[in-house]
Amino acid sequence: METTKTHIYFVPGLAASPEIFEFLQFPDEFELHFLEWLIPLSDTESIEAYAKRMSDLVLEENPILLGVSFGGIIVQEMSKFLQPKKVIIISSIKSRNELSKSLKFIQKLKIYTLFPSKLIENIELFSFFAFGNTSKTRLKLYKKYFSVRDRKYLNWSIYHVLHWKQTKPLENILHIHGTNDAIFSYKYIQNCIPVEKGTHIMIINKAKTISKIITDSLKMLK
Image 1 (cartoon, rainbow, N blue to C red):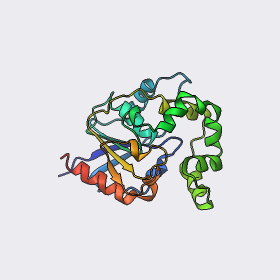
Image 2: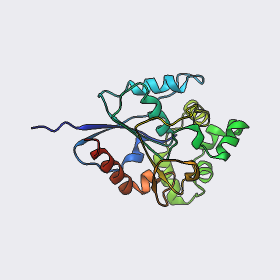
Image 3: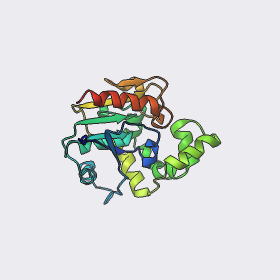
């Protein structure tokens, strides 16, 4: 008798490709689907409209939605158009209240308008700004995993990270967060499963730990 598989849809982080998920490991009972970033239709496309277009790519009913960083925000918005069995976010936020004071300061003064897409297009500057490390090994990784360079997409995404209007966490969310996250500070995150010394890119270097947390959590749904 064939076992019905559980479908998981993955959305990567800002500027990242689905390759960031390559080290995750799941039992055969899960079928994995990796979504690519869509290019916004315009600078003014709402995050709701964008999430609706992303949700149209989900072909199964009651899937698991999993997103990293900005992808975590997007899967939460996608869940409003779908009926997911579970929403899993990694290195992300559940509401704008979990933004750090520094990110709120950047948003309020519109500092992001001075250097958004140009910063990320320059991988050396981006890696130093985001992670404080420009070693050759790290740069090689960033060039591989952070490969989405479309300026319209980058500007749009940065704006919606900082201007996300969600004020209360949605229900049915599993939040996995690193204690050393330099983008979304662990200090401001509530109700999550902590990963000790996990950074904002722990989906790559702590994949084994994250895989186990996810697998154990999903087994409880059955």
